[in-house]
Amino acid sequence: MPYCVTGVKMHNMALMALPPLAASLYALVPGGLLSLSPALMFLYSRISQDRVLDNYTRGQIHGYILANPGGHFSSIKAALDLNNGTLAYHLQRLENESVIKSAMDGAHRRYYPVGMKVPEPKADALTEVQRIIINRISETPGISQRDIGALMGLSSATVNYHIERLLAKGVIRRERAGMRYRCFVSEAVPGKPPEQET
Image (cartoon, rainbow, N blue to C red; front, top):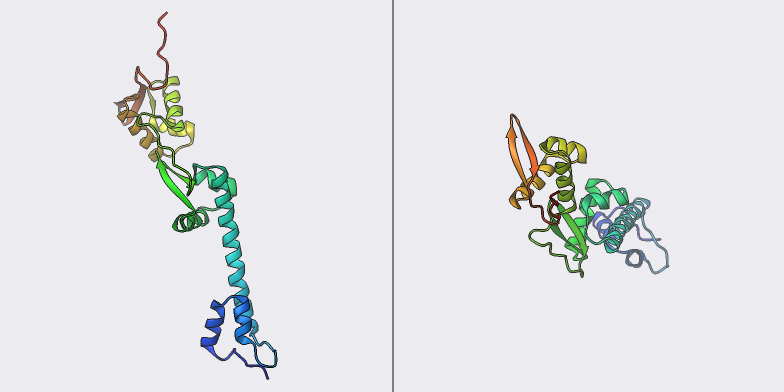
């Protein structure tokens, strides 16, 4: 008569932690019969499925980063159609396992394969977002930070972050007008050729 493991709680807990082959050998009796409870088999199946799904999702994320080094959270999320919690969890796992690494770039954290050298931006380099902000200010001198955010679809915190960096670099100047700040482009903008006098 096969040995029954359903009534032994400690045996069940041990079997849940063993891989399929080891679990089978553990339950094997001299007569060659196996006796794994249906409940135990269901639980082990669920655990295995969850592990496969986790590995598949992490594989997708890792593959995207390999193909698109320097991608930030929002771009990875949009490309793979993942929710914030799932993506944050798997990115953290990949970093903890030294599969990927990350570095801050302005307001964004960018992700790279672990063996890739992270580009070091120049001290006076402008990000793409900052260049767009400068263009918006140049097109509409005196534009407010709120209007910049509305035009670009950025939060007030993100706009303020980049405005502060541009002020520190001397690229723009800001004047208070009532309850708002008005932004203007400074005469000398890095990377922008000076205007020719006519």
